[in-house]
Length: 67
Image (cartoon, rainbow, N blue to C red; front, side):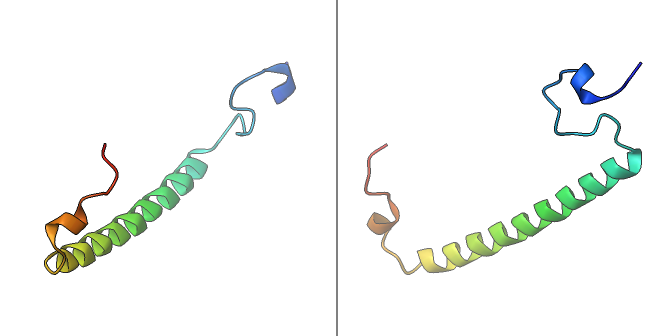
């Protein structure tokens, strides 16, 4: 029995059918690094916003467009 993707239609055709545990660990490791990067950037943005919000009047913080 062949394991080519054409014989097994799947929504995941772009993924290899067999990924080793090491492949998964590598992929997860890269995602975890990316998450840490984004969290660090978010923290920096929140800190800069909190320091500037002290100088900005409350009216200017509210979005102009009503929800």
